[in-house]
Length: 354
Image 1 (cartoon, one colour):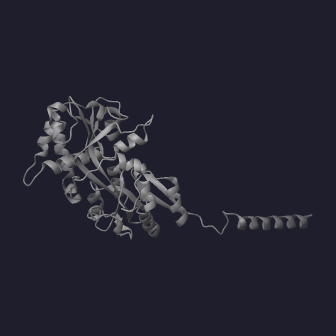
Image 2 (image 1 turned 120 degrees about the vertical axis):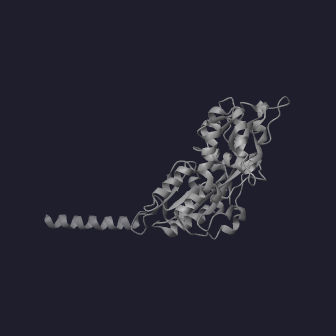
Image 3 (image 1 turned 120 degrees about the horizontal axis):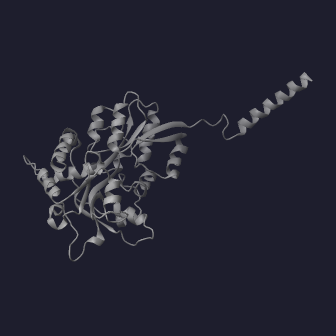
């Protein structure tokens, strides 16, 4: 009896080995390597696109969302000795210098960089890679303007009494687009030895500008256009906001209900970089290359509603038809932003929220 039991156990063990060898999950297939990407809360990409990279590299990409761009960068800096991730995506030109000064990135130049315009590459210092860009612009509710009151078309119009009580902006101390709009006014109204941007904001204050903490509140609660439920017909948003209004309209619409004031827009560029201390440097660099690939880049517009950095990317027709074209966006040197950001925000606070 004992001999029979031993024989049965040996046969069972042999069958288990054969099953394991023939199984797609058997020993011939390596377990996917985890790769952690720290990013902001707005990150989105199609599952099929991400799965393609994971399949090619036998990797399990894990997305770690770290709040808005500023909060995410702060987390990366505070944990740089024991990094939370292998790759960081979403640091923009308003926070880039802070990240570079903290030394959180490994230097890496992707072979795909020649497909990216030089204007997007100029501030990278060899440490980060431009992935996308977008323009922070004033948007307006088309139905609120017409023959009796034309739609505004400049930053200066916001201080005009005809538009009193119409503008809602985000606080630059708590909001990325709010900071971008503040920077646009500094770029526009500050000349050599001159600081007139404070006077401009004083005029906006006197014209009853409304300040809220974040973009969601500004766009969906205070703004009257599109999906907004408020009574303010002008808001700080993006040149691509009309695209989303068309894509998500229910019932469908032929034309976006919102317009864009292309004067005084601030260009935000988003970057990705390999974090120092990564245990998977080759996979991290491969992911940077993947983010510049036509597959990933072409998937950006209708997932994150920004423009891809790679000139070879395909732009969906609904995106190109409804996004506003900004030909003269305002930019500031990231080093200048880093050196003055806190002072500018404090001066803004003293003028607007006094």
